[in-house]
Length: 97
Image 1 (cartoon, rainbow, N blue to C red):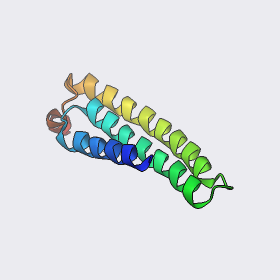
Image 2 (cartoon, one colour):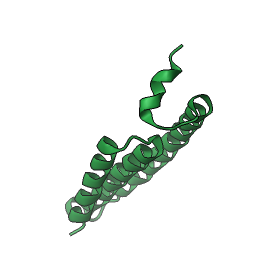
Image 3 (cartoon, rainbow, N blue to C red):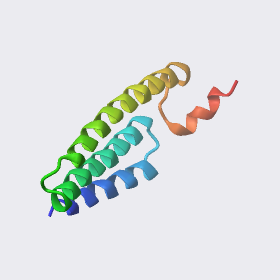
Image 4 (spheres, helix red, strand yellow):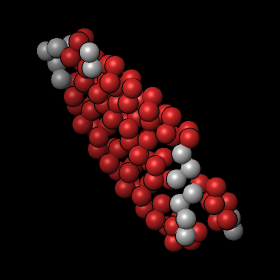
């Protein structure tokens, strides 16, 4: 029952990751995919091992890693914006030394 929304979320994330040119939109799409994977961790843990909580611990760990990844990505995007004055991925080639 929860796998269908997770599949839709992952599909929307992949579509957004492939089609967007804005770095912030790509980051949001990536986070959408990571959240759908977290839902899958919890759902499969609930179905396969209802007495254990391993999937929930994996989910908490994945959320912490995703938060750190988002902080680093936003710092990179801010630095790119300072140099190029745009967050379009086609404009990043201007940053070559």
